[in-house]
Image (cartoon, rainbow, N blue to C red; front, side, top):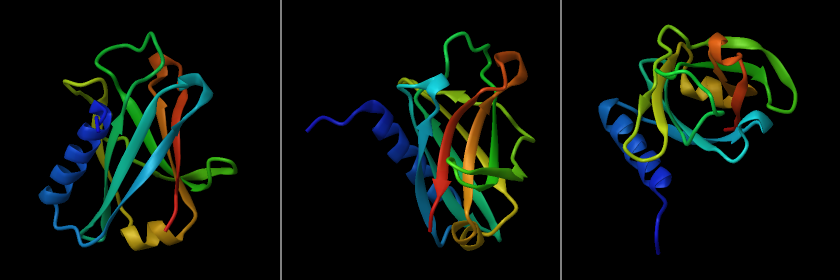
Length: 145
């Protein structure tokens, strides 16, 4: 059986992030590409630490024409991808990403909410390009307990 490189990178990223934190709970959320970013895949691993949630993202790509270095914004919003709500947590103190040797990008963020509260509250994750790249929503993922 042959595994794809993005899957291997996601598994490695998740393992490394989990080992670097004192996590007692973690969950992986698939990110669905929007129509402006169709054909791309993504995942985010959520890990609990110190009454916060660490988020470790892996995405396979962004719409063509993006400026480098790639800067992405991420948000945790109330609601769902189908029924969007207001921003609950903007995680944009740092917006840099890291290009991976395989096709894709990784970046990490943290949110000031405990993972159990996040899993029980009806939230979704949104990834958006920077203003020079059009402020385009490129990935969305519903957080489900």
